[in-house]
Amino acid sequence: MNIPATDLMTALRSGHSTSPRLTWYGPDAERVELSGRVLDNWVAKTSNLLQDDLDAEPGMRLRLDLPAHWKSIIWALAAWQLGMEVVLDDNGADLLATDDPAQAGEGFDAVVAVPLPALAMRWPGDLPSGVIDYAAEVRSHGDVFMAHNDPDPGHPAVRSSSGAAVRHAELLDSFAAGHESGTRLLVRASDGLEAALANALGAWKNDGSVVLVHGDVELTDKLLAAERVHGD
Image 1: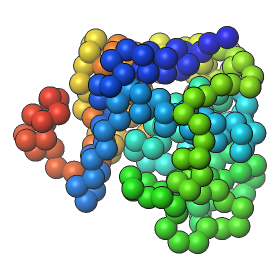
Image 2: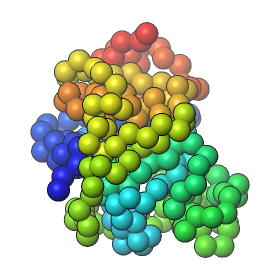
Image 3: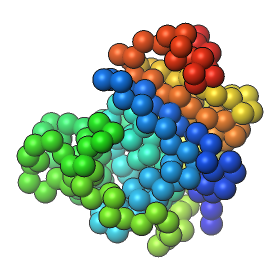
């Protein structure tokens, strides 16, 4: 049984699959552009890591202790494709993905360290015992994802910072922000991960694309013109 996130990934990989779908501007002149096909590949690899290495399955809870970033969006899409619940508050969860593993609390079945630099091939430095290095492990996983278990549209898909839960069946209606068809949407990372996820889903469900910009990056007229987006 498909859930909205699964249908969304199918649309991203099949319709205009070589067109930009997610563009990231980060510190130190970092720019990452993911087409629909490349975005789907990253999500598939991360889904396979979750399923094969961490025994993730529908109904499990994934805490995203990450800022608004292209990799955190990949993680959310992967979790939703599996039928998991993405937790954005401090409530308990089964698994943790974090960019600060040294500060990870206890009580998780597994902790994954996510280095944010685009070219990172491994975590820079030593990791606490048992923590999984996302950058070192994800590339060995397959580009196609096949779920071992059918997700349940009635399970929670996301628990917001306010503690409110949205089911998978309602993800693209109740959680996704409303945007015009085909929009090239500017999203400010400084607004937080929850807003970035809601806006990205809202753009993609209407065949649009997203330009996600770190708070330290100046939104110059040149950048806005190059990406064909409009500042607010």
